[in-house]
View 1 (spheres, rainbow, N blue to C red):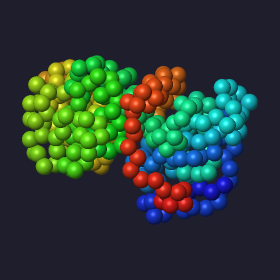
View 2 (view 1 turned 60 degrees about the vertical axis):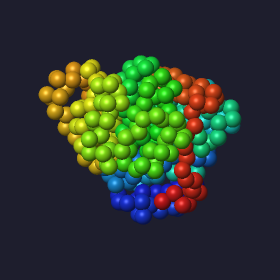
View 3 (view 1 turned 180 degrees about the vertical axis):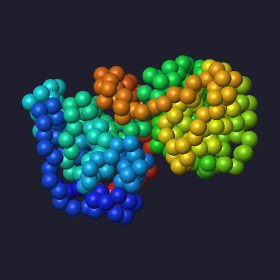
Length: 306
């Protein structure tokens, strides 16, 4: 089979498209013919050896796929050849075939396009876990979403709205923020690059501070978020797209009575597969009701994935 392979750590230019061996199938696994594979920030980190998962070389990046089941292990109950599924593989997704354990496969709703299914795990899976299980977001609460024009950020806007939150979306590009208003009906947007006092704008909009902060950016945005969070607020640590891992000032946590909450969806999905499955059932219901419309910016054939 063909795959995009990382044979040495480095930038995407070092990836190669070539023939490789088919992965072996254990009794609890399903083999998927990949029809679409999502591209996410962790894919860049993993090929540069900067991610928490470090697969042995050579490997294919690509942590999420959608496709058709073509082979089922003896203990992979509930799946059959021909099923349309989402596969949460972690890596090896940029290939013609991938093997995942049955707990890491989800049947797609009837009519869902492969390209929609494949973008759900990393961005929307992370977000539902963050807002439901970690933040316990309640209807009517203020949700501050940083990096809202990015993958996980835009997912947080959609999921937050479906959970009944009031949204303040931030970003560093006025054009992208305007697009958020157009796509998702976001009323409140703040540019944290052109507005040095953006935290004051957030406090003004929310009437004192955000109940939940969704932060995939890190760096200075993290610290400033602690200055515009509400009493007993929850700051969700999603990632560090800025490249800087911040530290929390304990005096701010004390004064705000707030919590800093880590979000590691990959570990959650592995440890609590049934809860993760229920989260995706909620996502599927929203999609069927027209309440979930993932924005897909680019499409490439496998050989152009690098």
